[in-house]
Image (tube, helix red, strand yellow):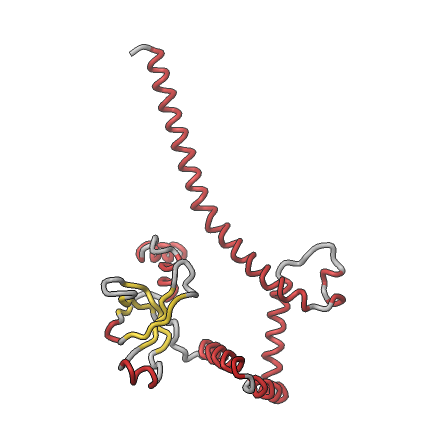
Length: 228
């Protein structure tokens, strides 16, 4: 082999190594940067969403940004937290309870609004209850058909006589969608058709968020690494 040919071969190998290194660096950058970027984007989107709806409600002379030359990101969240805390303190006393009862009686006179308010209130009261069992168990059920298994979260073990009288013993299961486990479908299924998973709801939610790319061993290893 001539020296010129050996030189060209060495150049080609060096070029391939350089391209492989660049490719590896690029994908490493994605693995490191994407979670950070997506997290920042989600947090910023939530902060902006709240700010855009709370700030316009602040009187002009009470808005700190009126006297500053820059915006205050998160001001809406701070005001919302303070407002909700004040609302909770107000309704904890007798006068506040009377006002709340009066407002609820008014809402009860509006056909559509009373149904929405009643359902939403019951949901939040259930979540706030320390005895609530909703979303504390991750399970597997055959959905949307035989042989197709989906992760679900038990929402109710007593759906009511109106349902059980029709289909027998049943439990409510929410089937989340990927990558947003907060959205999904509610199904009622016989208890013997449900396979309980020996994992936390948090781990099951991460399986859903990752589209199943992560497996249970990888999630457990990641949790073990954080605990060290």
